[in-house]
Amino acid sequence: MKPIGAQGKHFKHLSRGRLAATAVAALLVVACGGGGGDDPADMATAQRYSASCSDRVNNTFDKLLECVTLKGVRSHQAALQAIADANGGVRAAGTPGYDQSVAYIAEKMTAAGYTVTLNAFPFTYVALPLLQQLAPVNATYESGAFTGTGFGDVTGSVFAVDINLAPPRASTSGCEAADFAGFLAGSIALVQRGTCAFALKAQNAQAAGATAVIIFNQGNTPDREPLIVGTLGVDSGVTIPVVGASFADGTALAQAGATARVRVDAPQQVMQYNVIAESRDGDPNNIVMAGAHLDSVLRGPGINDNGSGSAAILETAIQMAKVKPRNKLRFAWWGAEEAGLVGSTAYVAGLTADEKAKIALYLNFDMVGSPNHVFFIYDGDDSDAEGAGPGPGGSAEIEKTFEAFFKQRGVPFKGTDFSGRSDYGPFIANLIPAGGLFTGAEGIKTPEEAGLWGGTAGDQYDPCYHLACDTYNNNNDTALDVNSDAVAYAVLQFGMNTETINGQRGKGNFKMPPVEENDHHGNSTR
Image (cartoon, rainbow, N blue to C red; front, top):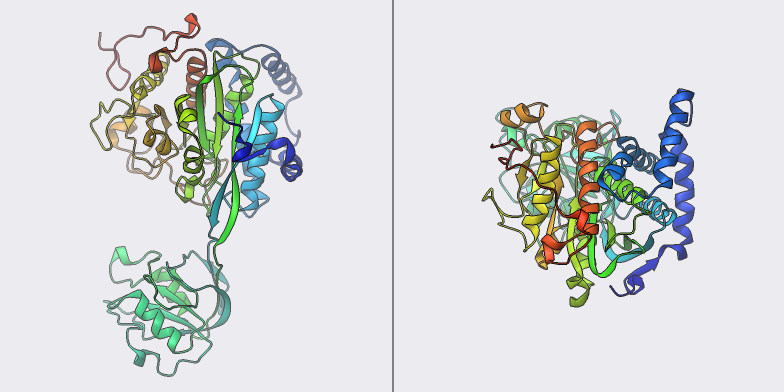
């Protein structure tokens, strides 16, 4: 790989990152308990155990998996939660919370002895809009900006435009200029979904002198109750902020004497960073990558999505710091995954053909501790015959490696499609073998899955997916513990031997151990 200085900067030159990480360190006293209330004997035992793991070379499965502990992984999640708490509850790309998350990872990996680089990529940051009612009640409502909106920060009286709150709530609100008769210029127009295009409603409001527009859902059917956010189309001519609201919030805003604040900020072009960390040892022509996205969404701290994957590969890397792998290890924490795989896509696009060819495989870990979990393995061989088909050559062997781990543990598992929703996407698009683990997001757990892994059938795998409640407590310890071991197992395995992937022989004692033939749930067939 060429020096990533062409795409980013070596971490040691970024004093801003060091200062941010220093600030985070102070927060960790609070996040991790600050030393109060722990049993001294337990603390002493933990300290001796930690010292043993940090002093020895964890170059066997037994030694490494003993040292990659749930406690260690959770400590990193606590750090990310502390960062979010100090930055408005989020760690999204483009925010200070993301910058401090980058600093935390980079400091930890530098201290562990890895060569750390911050890989730069341009990013368009779009802040969440603000919709706040100021009178007769004070409340902040979930909202979203319409595509094609104008920008601004507006406070004013709310003028309800020909709305219909009584069932069946048939609405032509804002569809005709006559609907705005008596409209007080400078007010915020409250219009109801129904009959005509969103753009026409906004155009009529702007022509009547509105300083902002709130379009709330119609409320005539269950699917028209929640928050509505749509598009005004291209070149609508609307220059004032236009935001959405649910039917219930629109009803509240329609009260007599209502005033509100609407803020929609213009997008900002900023530079963001992936964290790339390499082992000092290993064949630079045969690189094993493991990655996880570091950013959260703008609505929450993202401690399962994806503080879980980020923490698992971080703890694995720290515990492997003294190992001399046969193949070069490259760990990656991606930025702006939640905005469309922006960081990983930019990274792969910035590699030359020769640099891509040196990557033996990529392992992706995006959500590995979901509260209502399933143990999913990416279906590299397409044995489930669902969705996108098999991954690039070698992906099937990656899947088998994870299957071997779960079989040895006696833990059932299930395949999941390469849907392109996470950071493996740019790698498989460039024919780089890929695989990884996933414990589920907004999907619904089936009765069969509940029978295999427990939890609640009919609920989401992660009920806090992309929400403010995706905090440190949004976690299943069993899922996170097992998957953290699986991460370490696969990274060590391929760090020593990629013969099954590309024919490159490694250390003989790291050939895959034999396992019984099992069905796809890990149950023995003989």
